[in-house]
Image 1: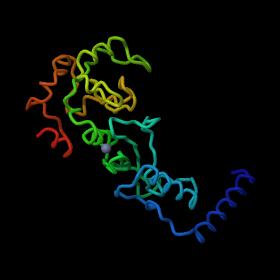
Image 2: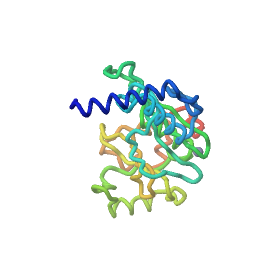
Image 3: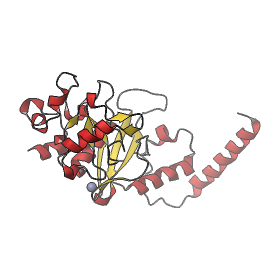
Image 4: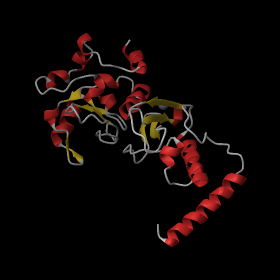
Length: 241
Ligand SMILES: [Zn+2]
């Protein structure tokens, strides 16, 4: 580190030492990992406060605190009275350590004081849809050959297919669509449905992708057949009873 850089780093650390020694008692969300419910702004404020006290360097692995990961949600994503904010926490014991379960995810619906913590980003997103969009698992899967997106926009064919197959009450702001995916392209993508909701991977439904019967699988009836039961979270089982 250059001398000047080292000097300002030392001064910053002195300031933080003073803040830590004389900080007024923190009243917000815990300054460590928690699975209790806190609103997005409370989680943001707590993480910001940790950084003021201890610095930005290594703040994610050292604090283990909830922070905004790369969720692709640029604005508030809402569906009816619900909204989703996504957070990530890094639970590695040591900053350099690696292993399964390093990252944990949380979806927060602030209007409902509701949240869902999951070991995967997809699990958190699916939990939120179970909470906010009842019946989403019955939506038709858009077959891969429809090519619903081209680069950053929806194709005409994709729009036409969706308009013809999706129920009108699910063609509203924030509603998701479900697209058939290749084996490794299973991430749920925020903001990519025609209504600004999620583009959910068909793997959410426990449907192995195969070109042979993609169109047949797009039938909602087939999705609820006993042989096509998805591996669902407890919240989804309530929807399916
Ligand atoms: Zn909600």
